[in-house]
Image (tube, rainbow, N blue to C red):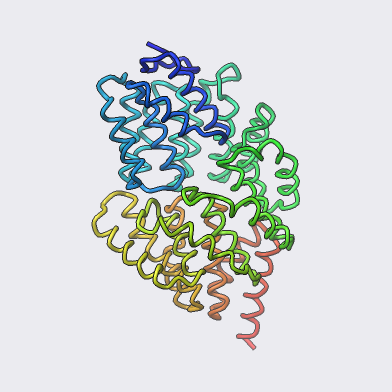
Length: 445
């Protein structure tokens, strides 16, 4: 029986297979290279390589494609066909992959956690659990998953620094910014190329409104994460957020054109960054030119996937902004049909939160601000369920408060903005709050 670099037993019929898996995991940690291609090439010549199919399928799901994607379906069938030759740990990975592909990300996360309770050094299980909880917005589990196993690790264990980076992000999403920043900076000290740890620190600075520090942090580390092809676009997006606060709009447009828009149609996470950034720019009154057209073309193939409510919302935003009315109608019909037949947790979240959110974002784009507010406000407290990070989901809060202001519903906007501006007094939040206060003064007069 072969063993991987974490000393875990590994089913393979060829000695080269374990090395290929180790290198693919290295790429995964760094968000670089072609881990999927490497794994599939190895699987073609090793009939026992069950973990290769598990990891490639999960990487696609975590990248934002739906379970109906033909490659995901193929890789799940291939993994299950090799189940009898796999060891118990690997069989548990197959089961978790199948659960994730069925739209039960939270349950899959718990299954990966179960693997970690017996094999705390299984970095694939740790990373998969981390991704799964992130995709359904479960901050508490995101933090707990890493913290439960961290005592079993130290600097002598491969990937220790990456585990710290994951722990930092979990702490940040759970609101523990001080500890998150400490852990994230320590992770970067140990491994400067760890883009996810850089990302965790950027989140802590963003959530505290430390805009100039955030720009300095990301610019000082850019040479280390520039080559992280699967994450660098998102880190550029993070740099744009404080730049927007500083009104460096020309630079934001340059970053969008050079660093975010240049992706293929299956890089769904990059597409969402593009949608979110253009939406924020237009909310600030900027003209984005014809940039929506190119983005909409890449989004088209994902109309019927409904991988996550978070993904659906960005698809709806893009088509509405690009004035693709036919695509908007077709998407809404597809979304309603999906929730009628899909009884998974994902389907339930789309039905309970996603439908109204999409309709609200579309109404906002159609300048029906009262309807947009009426659709988004009742579900605002549940938007965390659609997944993504606190910073990413703020675009929906931004849309709601702007819709309330434009609909003349100043008191409702004030009630949302006042605690936000008090907690994190960024220029944009203070400006929104001032608009609400001015509206209230005028109404009183």
